[in-house]
Length: 225
Image (cartoon, rainbow, N blue to C red; front, side, top):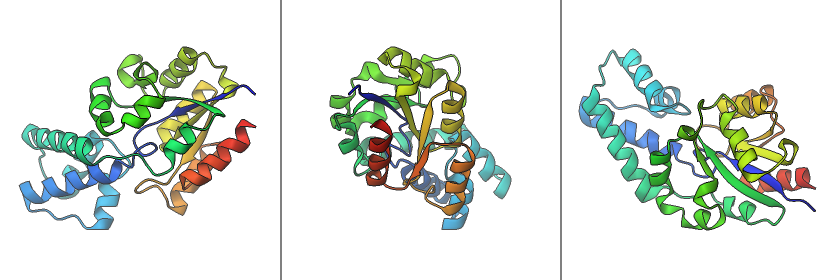
């Protein structure tokens, strides 16, 4: 049986990094502005978006000015959290090691960002060599454009019909659809496992939705066979 290629997003799929970034923002807003976000505000303002959008939302919500010094502190703390506390989501290694699949990573992070995020992921480096970990600065356009997923499939030598993107964001789903590659939505990371978000995934036309790695493994195995 020919192997199928799994094209993994990183944040929110391989690692539940969202909870670390939310902590960084909540801690620094408290430190610099004595501003305490409750859980509802943190979810509304910080979950599922890039730092640029987090900055805009917080500034608009609280009429603050988050200057370069504040954003530099955010960047430094994200690196600290990522290199000390980030871990693979339970069960992801078992899927990657399944003989049904070949694997690669296609992340919206830059090569520099991805390098420090991988500090604690040596087991994944052993499964997926770095030349098959594709970053946004390797292509002309990032997600939701299809470039990154097409590069992954082409470099690995797989027909698109034998590929499955595993993503957690609407940009992942849109990029996969534009590339002509099926996409499985993983919603087990912080902020994603809600009925509302699952509905958005289905509306985006994903192949399936999984809330745990065990569920994802079952769905991928059924697809591969």
